[in-house]
Length: 100
Image 1 (cartoon, one colour):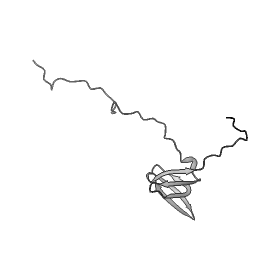
Image 2 (cartoon, helix red, strand yellow):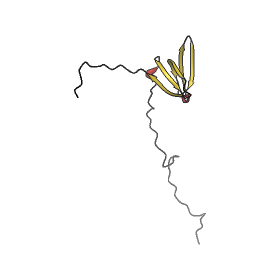
Image 3 (cartoon, one colour):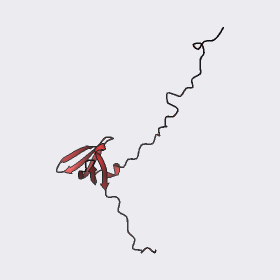
Image 4 (spheres, one colour):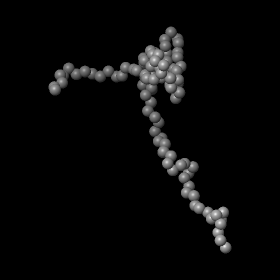
């Protein structure tokens, strides 16, 4: 008797529900650059060019809250912010002259 296509079975490898070419996810969380800036004065440049000079009051994955002073706060979506400028730690300058 001849075998038909409906009778033949082809083994299918198990992939655990993931595609073979799917990148592996790392368990390490992404870097958190905003945590050290909480409570510090920053200058946020918005995408439309407006500057926001305020204190960083809080954030979540999608929004940042700025304290403008006088009891006013501003909630901005992160995608609307182009850059955030802040003062980093001050470096000590040595009195020694550099030799060229």
